[in-house]
Image 1: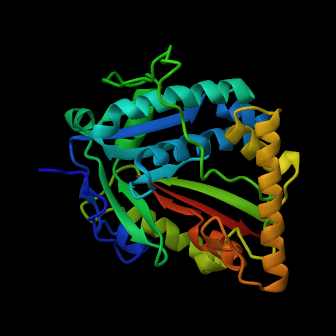
Image 2 (image 1 turned 30 degrees about the horizontal axis):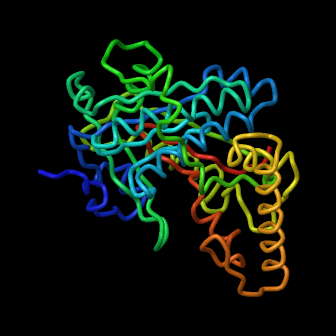
Length: 327
């Protein structure tokens, strides 16, 4: 049976509460693969003030895999210092070649080592880990993947060599004429966003084991958090007013550099110029209300869409939340 449309055909569940109740997950086909990346010693790099370098390395690996398939209509999770993508097995070879290029670019651009690999879902099943996914309807245009169980944590352990299993790594010496990573669609041009309530809190809540009723413990944790901070929607870390675009080298420079694969030269300057023009259009549309369209979007709505589409709430076997709270 052709399983390539498995995720596309999966009906979205009604919300995150339904996902926590365990009602919207289906097993990922055994002929699929799990693609994973993470920055080696990301904690040390962040402590050294290189948070943006780490985050961008994770982001470009996500967009490069999405550009292999031509869409983001596959289950994926962006984790800040890396990502996890689930794809039909037919993409296995192309993914490894592209990941090799991403590793090379990240090393050359910022000196960070990007760990990457591919684990077959069948291998996870052999180890007794059932990988199940679902999706939650966020807006008319956007659904977000959710996952249950310990399989994704197991993939991370396999990649780091803590669990012995078969894993495919990108070639150490890739063909110089082979496929290159496509970073088209990667955008990084917003200033750091201050908390609307004083502090921004990131939570990772893990349940020791799932029950037959699903992730009831995580649901209880969410209810406890809401009893303290109020409705989750009221503590969203983004607001329209707090989002400010910048085309400076510090803010938008990484986007131009990765798109040009260099921090200097004509291609880099061309990308900087394009970013400057697009940032100016966003500001004009926001200030005047003019119906300006660019990058496939109505620029008047881009800040509101950022809020709607921000993955500040995730279920990937754990419950991850980013909320704005008072000190």
